[in-house]
Length: 80
Image 1 (cartoon, rainbow, N blue to C red):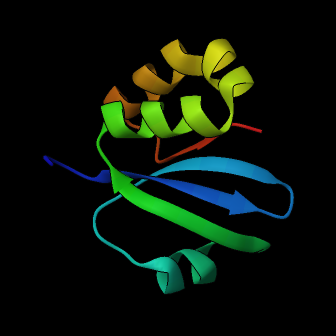
Image 2 (image 1 turned 60 degrees about the vertical axis):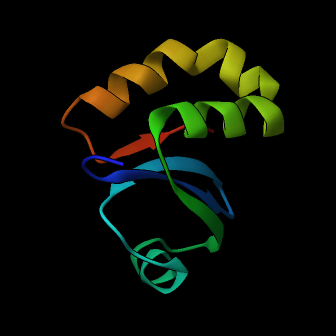
């Protein structure tokens, strides 16, 4: 995987897609108040596949936005 991987971070108040090189759950827990769990790092294709399987409604509504986020400069995308 080239560049930072995509992590799916589940929080008490929603789901975030996060671009971050490396990092384990402890780093995510420290960075995000309300941390519940995280998965990743994923490539864009893997992240989209995971989101489609777990939250098909989010995937249907936001797939293009997720792809733009992955290619853009932002580090965090609020999915829910």
